[in-house]
Image 1 (cartoon, rainbow, N blue to C red):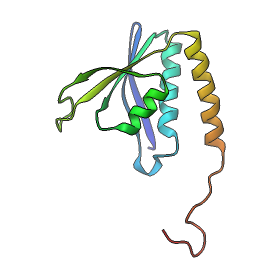
Image 2: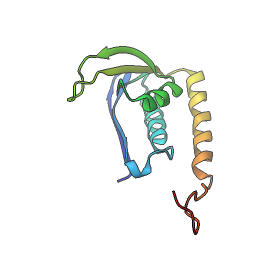
Image 3: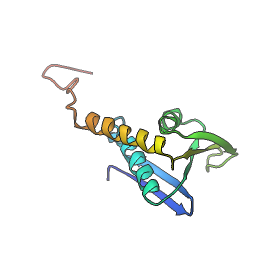
Image 4: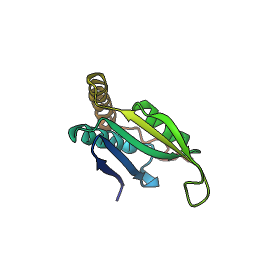
Length: 128
């Protein structure tokens, strides 16, 4: 398995409970693809809000979520088993401007995923 996303649907709100990408596949925009797909499904289901929790230390994920319109709403103290806090974030999604922005992100992401990547460090004699 390369990655997965899980979410719960309640009237008016979709809550993303998990997004995960295998470590060997990170940095290839697959997490963003999973998030985008979940956001599109939330809109298809008639949701007006999408929420999630993210580790306070996970700046990479927080940046991705902000890119998709998520804003910090509260802190859950010692939310994770190791005692780390979680940040609750929400995105207001059921507006025409948001839908348009999501469609543009889909086009950009698909173009990026189809672009060939150079094999850096994989040529004969190269070492890392």
